[in-house]
Image (cartoon, rainbow, N blue to C red):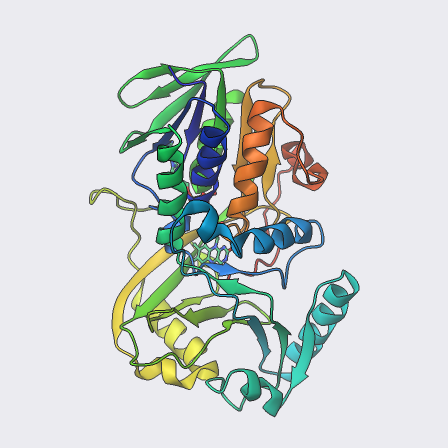
Length: 385
Ligand SMILES: Cc1cc2nc3c(=O)[nH]c(=O)nc-3n(C[C@H](O)[C@H](O)[C@H](O)COP(=O)(O)OP(=O)(O)OC[C@H]3O[C@@H](n4cnc5c(N)ncnc54)[C@H](O)[C@@H]3O)c2cc1C
């Protein structure tokens, strides 16, 4: 019988399992599908502080610090590279947006600069000369998502964590306001504490407890190319209005996406993981938009395409909390398209919340209760990538 059940083997749950197992806790990490089967596999895996909300910036800064030595800690190559982030302005209106963002973030203490004209190609020759300006954050970077999640899980297992894949949690068991276990598709598992890190499905397990996590679920199409013979782009690329993003992986593949679009709620998981087939129009959208700012992208050969789901909360900030109504429950969800970078820190926070240990960060902006009575739509702009 585990002491703590962690629901979801994305980067959040995997990192929490690693920290808890290493601290000597008896942990079971469960996933309905498999590790990184959802957002942590669909992601662009940008690791950035730039473009963050001020409330989230300290978490991102701590995460970027941790990413730099995480491969040593986990004993695995995470393909992390600190090669910077360029957020591009393609029109005069976007130049104003980027200029304001740089001013705000510089004031918040981030090393970030505003660059114009040929200075953009000085940093990244692959960027089209049609780009007018950009923010440049040299401390940002990227990592390989599947390798990173696997490394956390392998470290957790080495420290004694148990895992179970293909097992869906169908309900949280609560008696007298306290977690007593979880019910899955195959069994009942008694436990003292639960970490809910179930990504876009987290709300389904909270709703029966009377807890509401309002997010708008939208889709993003991602195109991954075959490897180019050489790497011609090191930084991660975003744009001012977030209608595309992308990067070139260490192995030479492009990984680029659209902005967010509507989702009808349908998916197919008959292959053992959830899939939404991208529309041809969305694939064309990636090629048009990303290909306009990185011309070499359009001539690469497509290796795979997929649709990812993004969970945007009303303020585009996550929930990292232990809701008062249910003792023994810690929630990490609603990362609004930028939770991969935070993973190492999210894992530490969720582990501390589950055990009652002190947390090194101010979690007031991430309380679930901030959405009490919310009945609107989540419209905050979310910058993925
Ligand atoms: C296209 C795209 C691009 C992105 N780009 C970036 C980026 O560049 N940088 C960045 O920082 N972030 C990015 N993000 C966001 C980031 O990927 C996510 O915020 C992050 O991966 C969330 O991790 P997680 O572990 O919380 O959730 P997930 O990775 O979604 O993991 C949740 C897991 O829970 C499991 N699960 C769900 N319900 C149940 C259940 N009932 N029982 C058991 N298991 C269950 C699922 O199978 C899944 O494996 C992007 C996201 C997308 C979709």
